[in-house]
Length: 455
Image (cartoon, rainbow, N blue to C red; front, side):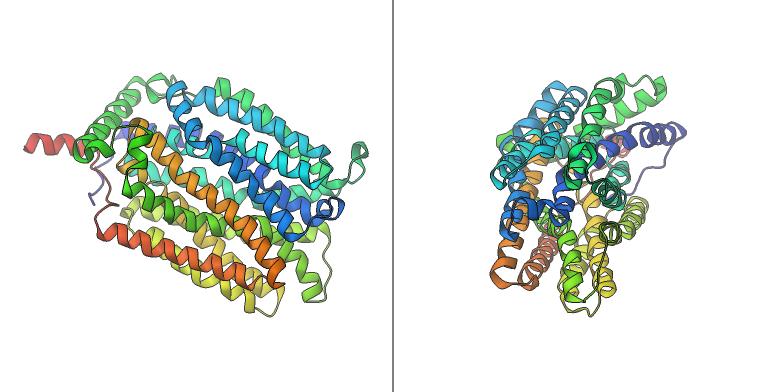
């Protein structure tokens, strides 16, 4: 792995402007995106499950079928983003999913819930890999972990802020004649539509068109990214450029997809079932929680996760991204999640789950800096979408299998052991990739030019 090139004043100001002007807005889009897709987890234990007569398996299927809809159009969506530009495509995605999410306000049966969850996945298809691709195209490799870390903060903070917000909205039972969980769906959906309209005018497809950068900053970014892409193309050959066929034939892409599968399996097992597990504390430990109590308890693991994510990605940026930045958290998460089953109190259980959440969120933004080290152009769009597709398969599997195993066994022991297994598998695969030399950072544009001079 190469060392970072010394930064210049132009480099520092360019990266700072991107960090301040671009990343927070895309992170806000991700915040709303994740809130809308997980809102069902707050609704189920707070009236929706009873009103629609859902079993744990039915709720798991409703949670997971979202990912089947997402998978159907994910790769084509990312290829369309590459062709038409992020500004238009991400804005279109947001408005579409906002409209579908709004319809959950009036769902009346499990069948309608399944249909809308599937359509929500179709509407959201391509947003997350598109956002990753978009941000990766704005900064050189050595800054990518930091930028993706700032972007990824939106995901744990969605629960930190979103869980109490959902609880507060659910508490407005009777507003407009609606049950509390329906009020929540109504008000968490509208921001997506508004942000989509704003994104059409606010986002810019590439650094060369950014008027808020100085000419020197635009030139530096354009030249640095071009040199880095040229270096990747020269060293990686067909793996750097190509199309969907190229991504599908890359063994490295498929192994990374399996690594991501393990992390996302754990992420959504927690996201969709943690509120239900917390509701179960009332019977398990003979205690009582209000709606807001449950919302705040749900949020507890995610604030430390956001803090760990921030400092973990900072460490990876300053000292160079290493395999253990991904594999280490996978091991900690894989070993900690089954321990939650054996804690003797709600506080101890949530404490162990917090360790698992910290592990997952520490690894994810570092992981996403890896594919763009060897992919560029259409191959990057297809490869990143393919990796995220496997994540969506994990999202469906974890949601449905967790609910099914809970109904079958009567407890969460088997589902959480399975989470631990998949996270440990991710660690093993990441170490295997590293041993084969498949996770090294490319040289920066400046370093590439120095090497060419030496030659």
